[in-house]
Length: 235
Image (cartoon, rainbow, N blue to C red; front, side, top):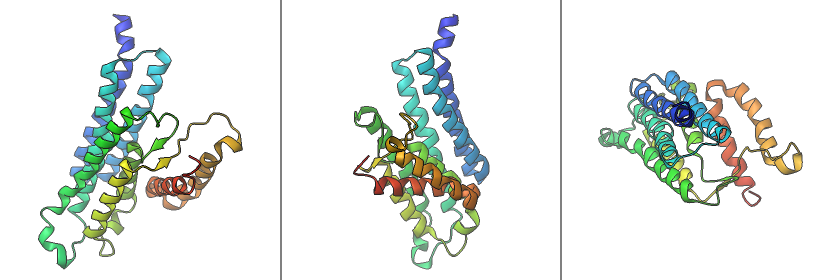
């Protein structure tokens, strides 16, 4: 009994990740973006610890891998799509797309679809052991949660509109499956030579969080993409 309980600790953490994603979706549909963002962070923490605990306990199972992908698609796929969907209800619509107002919000769920494709691709792609090909789904979810929480007043002002939001949905969705090498923050050692990109990234994060605060995560994700593009030949 004790061994069975220990073996299921990672799966329990994964289920907590999935549960967090469900809460994010509910909070988003209610327009409670702060708590939606908080539970994205909580879900990301569970996602980190389930793998770490599995390695520490030397336990793994086929169901664990499948459950992990399912949980990630909810927390980092459906949940940010729900945030974008809710935002579509609030943004300004120019006159020339007023006729699309009833249907355009549903394009937000492209984020969920492409997140599922990203996760399926990751599961079978042997190239993504020490780095990533395409934006990781947790990064995409943090982008949406942070952006809407920190910049809600701007996003719902006349300076921003549904066209820009649609373009943002498409760009972020395509980044998930793009054949773009993106660096990992895993440090092999502490040397500058082997971790130059990671150190540049972390140093750049400090002023971004100080300047943008709640939307700092969104700024950091953009910084991450820019660095990945600049150093793509070396990744």
